[in-house]
Image (tube, rainbow, N blue to C red; front, side):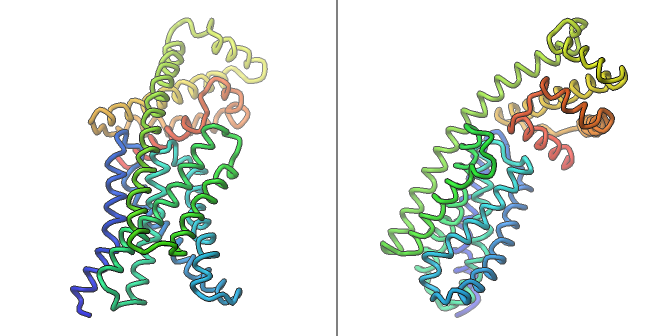
Amino acid sequence: MGYAAIALHVLIGLLPVLGFLAALFWLDSYGLVAARLVIAVIVAGVVVAGVCYEVNGALIGWTGLDFMTYSRYVGPLVEEFAKGLVIVLLVRMNRIGFLVDAAILGFAVGAGFAIVENIAYQRLVPDAGVGLWIVRGFGTAIMHGGCTAMLAVIGIAILERWPAAGIAAFAPGYALAVLPHAAYNHGFVSPLISTLSVIVIVPAMLLVAFDRSERAVASWLGHGFDADTQMLDSIMSGGFGESPAGRYLSSLRQRFKGPVVADILCYLRLHTELALRAKGLLMMRENGFDPKVDAATRAQFAEMRYLAKSIGPTGRLAVMPLMHQGRKDVWQLGMLESESVAS
């Protein structure tokens, strides 16, 4: 087989999943996910595929199962678990806030995995025809992305309803990701029907997630912006001391020295300003603007880190009742700081 044919097969195997990922990224009207993060997650998917290749080989030897049986019953368990670990890590790092970025980054993990799998398949079956590569590109590759996106979306949806669920929130999504993966590997229907099913089901599932997430982002931005604005107006006005938040800070003088209480107030002000700036950034992106994060924002983050050390862990715990510290609120500051470093 000539180099042109090999190149064509590789392109057919890779372009559909990468094109689908690019479409998801483009549909993210709020710009919740930075392009560099998507690339980093694709690379993570590539690494996961390499690890799974070694693990699967070892397990096939240990279990004595033939390749087909292993790929139907054990492979999906191993591969979806490994891909899911990347999602859990991203959540623990506060890099996923909504269903949209969960879907995009979940699909990106699967895309990276599919890239390695299809390149390896090309080496194993160099004489395969175009029809097989259409199935690999539009079916298998998008299946990998769709299953991991489903795991991520279901996990974030559960965390939104039950924040205390922790890592257990991803167990149902893991189970639901393994099932279609295993069913696909079983080949209950013809490869063409399997591929068509993937092309229909995965986009429909992700569009539902996008629609729900867009409404959730809009609602969170509206309520959060109003609350942060009121807090900042209260801090900057002369009447802050008479507000409930001001009286609470005054009560801290019994436990902290005056300069520490002043630093706590500055910490609260900076946190609120940065939260407002993050929400404003998302609002501008949703309206078609592409604002850049300036040096002043980077300086504010540096000052907030200094103040965090100054007031210490006890001071940060003391001010927490006055701050919005939900998962989305922590995510927004991580997003803004990441943008400030990249600018």
